[in-house]
Length: 415
Ligand code: PMP
Image 1: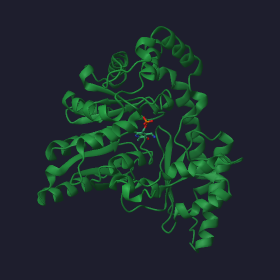
Image 2: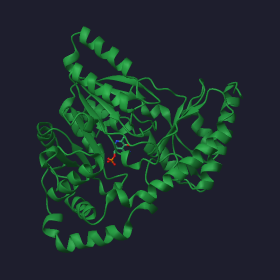
Image 3: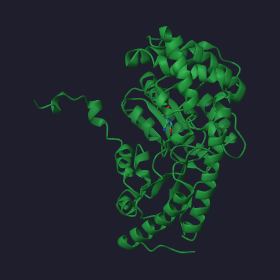
Image 4: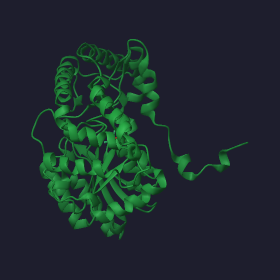
């Protein structure tokens, strides 16, 4: 049978996830990978989780092996409200403000379903988290891509775009701004306090929702912790997304949406048709884990390790790339990523072939754009390579850059 004529417009629009394709090649012997934005498996609390998992299955199987409510396990919701009070100073929540999802990725998909039609507009950062692009693309909305500066989105550009929509009589089609507030994926950037406040002012003036996606906030290793946009706005027009993926384990597939109760009710309707409920088993395991252990205390050694790796990586970047003119990289205060911007003329996707020969992997920046990409960029994660590999990998990155420049006739300017 020929299947082509049967496919939906939506599925034909989906491009394969380049990161997943590239990472398939990352397993060969001797490869140093700056590619994966995934936690080091050695940091998972295996013993504690296995004991709790065993107890949950033996003693709570009537709940933990059964279907659960779409909203999520009440025990987990209770624990999460407690955590938000303790660590985020958010006190205005009850059970109706929370929905548990199958990872934050599902939360993004649900939000696309709840807010976006083909004639809708939403603003996203440039570059954008690839998974958010994939989730929103399914609704085929109009994007307004806002460049990132060192302290987050350029809000002057956002405002001028909003004014334009207002003039054209389309502002009621503008639904939300999507932002990764801390240690952005892919760019490593944090939205400053001033910009958080300004974004709320704009949201009030132009009547839009803010989606604050924050998987990395708990992984701050230096600098001052900032209040969430949700906290600053007391949740009035902000939807906060959290996940267990980077603080406990991505395999549990647990995300948390925190929002106004009316919005949560709509999201529950959207989720019902997707999976009825998220895994009751992993939710109950996470709930009992949080009851027995302090989630954020448990990850302190991991954060310490990430900081040491970040410092080592920044040192190596200074050593091996610091003398090249017009090259920049982000110094993250937390999370897993830095972002390198090479001089004009570089195409990091094309350069990837040389990188593979040199046995290093990075993620070409062009994967992180919903519109015209900036091809001279790359995402580099420092959490998985060892200290020696961070040094050696950065040295090989220098060689890769030099070889590519030579091949393309780019004059690398040395300071
Ligand atoms: N948002 C951002 C910004 C992310 O980086 C990720 C994971 N890479 C997600 C959402 C999805 O996370 P998960 O589905 O594992 O919770």
